[in-house]
Length: 74
Image (cartoon, rainbow, N blue to C red; front, side, top):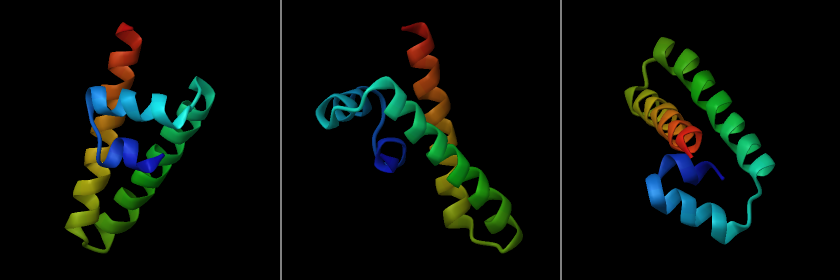
């Protein structure tokens, strides 16, 4: 599931969800796991100076935010 917010965006993420057959509850758990990992990476790697992982974490969080906004508009 992590690739949905790491590598995909917008409509391609919706197609991915449909193709893997993820129901809303599974999708929500995946979002939570990605958010938890991204936040952990920000906390750890900001202190230990790994800018690539920090940028990836910010990207995932931004994609999670966009994805949720789109779903709220529905």
